[in-house]
Length: 164
Image (cartoon, rainbow, N blue to C red; front, side, top):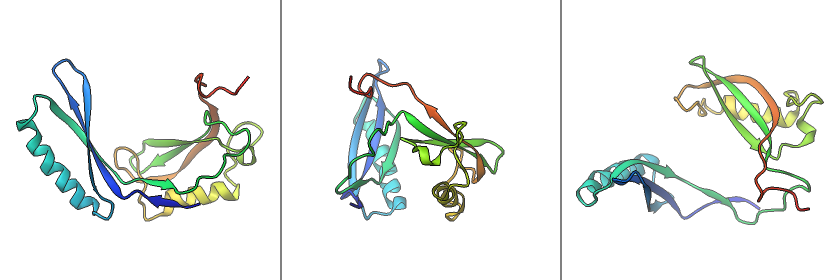
């Protein structure tokens, strides 16, 4: 099992029509294309679109995707709505966060907090905080340190519910 790249990256354009409805256009670029070049091409195409559509382009996203070539089986009893929530302090004084579905009991303390001394959690924190200061908040501010980490259960949809 390995994460392998898809053959292409995707430029996804989001449109809005006169009624307020949203539509999308997906255009592919070779995976090896640099992000700088792909974004420049995306902007070039976006500049041509208003001349051929009555809709307005709201935005476009560039996505480089990796997928498992042979995904394994999830751990027995794992549930996506059982999340580990990680909140990070940022250089601008604000916080940023993400959650990890199916958090395992081995990284939890009895009160529901995540054990920040657990070696797997230490490895995650090191990657987020130290990988060339690459990870940041949505505003672009550098992530400085882990503020809190705890278990949270999300609502379970009918599709997610355990079989009866």
